[in-house]
Image (cartoon, rainbow, N blue to C red; front, side):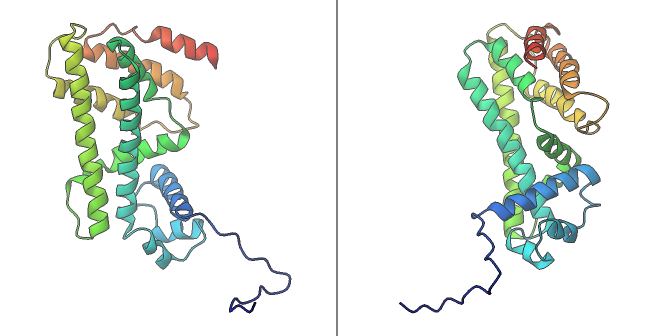
Length: 231
């Protein structure tokens, strides 16, 4: 049966078709690494295009702008953190066990996730200002709303600990911001492959987070010891 399909030239193969979304994921991976390693402002959008083997104008098929890409990275960062948070809370009835798991788990992340955290904390202020482009604004609004929802979820969790007499009475919202603020401060300076292991950074900072909450600073030591033994 005749077809209108053009034959492949002799000696050449058709390039394999990529699954939908694969190219976008490649762009995000390159952007995360470049934004986290060199800074958002220092990263040229054209260099991102070249790294994934597409023309600069083709980037706009996936993102309205470099900032749209940034907002999607930020929204995904918060979304993934929240999914892990909700899973840990749902699986544990013991509040102290849930707290320790949440704090330790937040540092149990890959190098790429570290770079996402670096991007998030470095550019966080950008989500405060509305944008004119519709998809860019939708991504910004999503990142902002999810950040607020995460803070509320943490505050609710801490309030439950106070109700059970496991935490000293305090303002849950301020306490949340103190704990998350200390966590976020790590990503201003920590880089994968540096002189400090993330496991050591985790043990140090989790004990300080526990102290801020009014819990024994060594509450997570047993968990860390088990992780060290398993490594």
